[in-house]
Image (cartoon, rainbow, N blue to C red; front, side):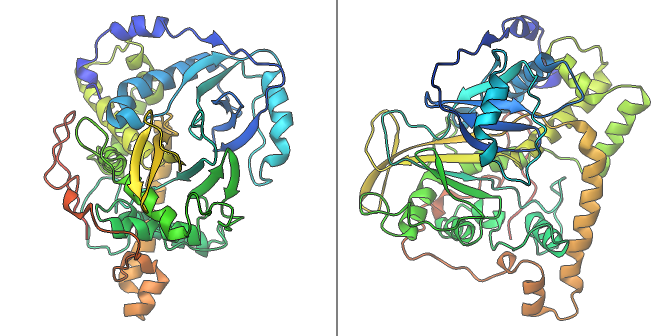
Length: 446
């Protein structure tokens, strides 16, 4: 990531080169529903491409929003996520394309999803389909939203025994926002120990909620509403669930970056790039507001090489950008596409006595608005109350553990078919210094 203070005006020329091409739709093109979030909906076609259509917005300058996001990802996110990043380019849509696509896939959308797709939006984000492996069939794609285990957003060490994710699950379950709880815990998922990563993935197979889905040849076959994995298993691919978990774990712990990092280490490093607490960040937000400055707009000006902020406010903006990166890293998705056929053009791994070809992508990296900071402060206070219930629970011991996420303090469990070959890798943030920020990791794992 480039420092704001050393950011040069070459982005003015870079911005001018981002004029979008018009998307060329083929006759008979088949569009499939992939998924959606609060700001967009993703569809894929039979040509290995994905389109992210924007949901309703109060801002009409779509090209500005897409271009700002593209520059943000290119400058702030791509240097961190490196070869794992899957992003795209802004494309101009032909008239009525968005309307035709939505009418085709509307019946696949959950009734709980917002329906406010902006059909008049003339632009979309076009990117490679993360589920596609050209020339391969019987492709399994696992999408995992790992979230984060940080106890506070400012990475301050606390004596609390329950991670933020598990606290939030408990809070949502108590409020009847979810119908079940999962034993998944990010502290296991981001562990360098294969047995703990396997335990985390096994918990997602038991109860995925919205944190894991599986597609087979671009068809969704596993999610919170359908937990049957029989369609995944087979003699030529994975005989048991544990065999599939073994493959997933080995892929996640395989080191692929120039700095000898695996995808979990890269994500965890990005999650911990922020060094300030939420109250400290809200103070910065207030300073900008008191000067009549919109932080999101100022980030856009900086990305365009047009910032007029003085050095003091540029330093503050740099801190906000680091916080934004950490929040993005806590909300990304990991896409793991696996073929049981050896392909020298793809990454390969040996597991269960077989050779598998695969690719790993990180998706969902759009810029987060600084206007959400006041809401984050409220959420932090709510989670602090939920976490304090753990220490103050009147029953204590096993009952307290059950009350607030027993996976956070449970004894280690190991799947028999997953080994600890990677235990010697060490933890990413133990005395590690980030190249861009010069900040060392401050949180230790329990």
